[in-house]
Length: 208
Length: 186
Image (tube, rainbow over all chains, first blue to last red; front, top):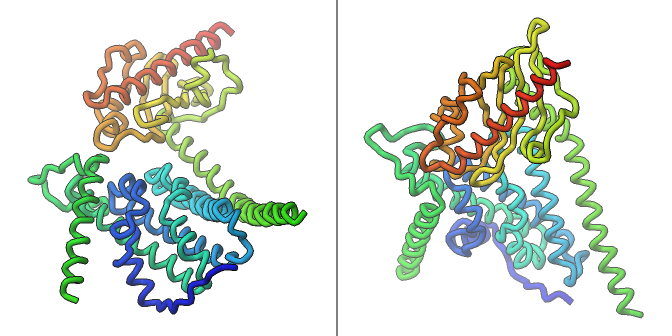
């Protein structure tokens, strides 16, 4: 019935995929909307990354566990329900115990439901692979997303407000480039970093 | 026949997934709901206490016009030593990026004591200038007579946000004016 790909997934390969080769943001170009919107400060970017990692790991785990129970015709609906469930759990926990983070991330937490990183991993990986690799895939893709978010938001916060993690580190001589905090700046930084990552990848490929 | 069975199976399985997810959410909600409610209540209380010290009593069903009902939330009458000090009015207005919710404090002698922004989603660095705690707009709306609202100027670049806040403050003063007249008449 299901054409399972018999592949040996080593943990090393999976982490390499998530963090570098198929990094959700720089490699697969998934989850751009939240990446642009939330990356105005490092704390926001990092928390968003952790929330996505949490949801991605749990949804991968359960979708892999249920991969025979969920029939192909209803899979998308079932995935969305499972993902939405975990996202709501995160949303409620943040609101209850980390209100300031919940306030600054705002609408973007509920929107993790439709973050395409999560559906993409469910559809292309967790629904076809055994539990252990799916779990690892969730963790590594989540970490890849988090690292990318931290890199983007570091650049934007440092140049856009002259601070890092809310602490002002550039002196008064530095006038922050407000542009980088605005959505336009988000696109510029993302594009620049993406070009940089591709350049590095290509350089490495040529060497090999 | 077989096809029917198949769709029944699909429906049952999807229902099972939904049921389990709902159960999980019910449990999490049961744990977090009281914590969240308590936090919201405490934040509101702290904000009101900072604006007008005294004991706050929620007014039950104040009379509001249709337009006012859209922006005005809870109204608290603040008393200290048996004397009414003023009112804290919860206001929600539409700013540039979404709802701005705030508390406007008006004293019985028709002064605006201050405005506290509870939440907003104005553009960072642009519209947000109007809602900053130490910004010029909120400073201009502190300890001024109610009549003075009309002469408060908005922040340039944050016109929509400023106007939204000013209109919310104006509504609050109108509601308080009426409440005070009713109280005086009674």
